[in-house]
Image (cartoon, rainbow, N blue to C red; front, side):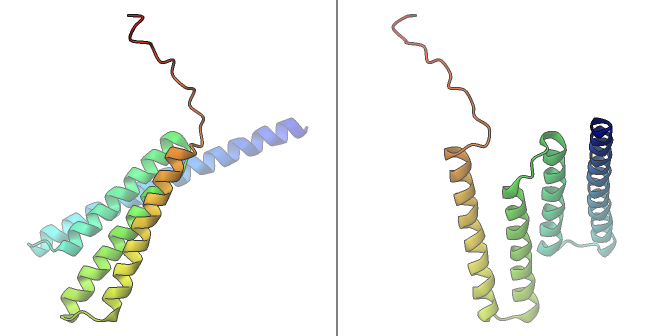
Amino acid sequence: MHALAQSFGNLLVEAFHYMALFGIGGITAWASVVTFLGMLDKGHVTVDDILLLFIYLELGAMVGIYFKTNHMPVRFLIYVAITALTRLLISDVSHHNGPGLGVVYVSGAILLLAMAILVVRFASSRFPSVQVPARAVRDPEEG
């Protein structure tokens, strides 16, 4: 009875997992198309619009990677955060016509996130989550 309940529970979790991924992917695609059509309707494109499309692209790539590997790519979340903060920074400077202390705070946050990417990349190369067997190195003398 326990094994049957466990396999049924696993089936429900997997079904929810795939439905949620398809939903998030579909909503991301829909939002990017609506944004693109809005740009066409405006007749011009701003840097804010381009950065928003990059955010949608990164979210779509993150969903695709998660769908294929069942691993959440933390670096992509940080990339989305950096792009969102860059968009905020550009929007703030262009609309308020003057740098203030907020520019320093947002720039500091972007710098911290960039350093976090370096830490994550270093840690993942130094301590991989999946152990890759060492390749047999051929001796060039052996031919």
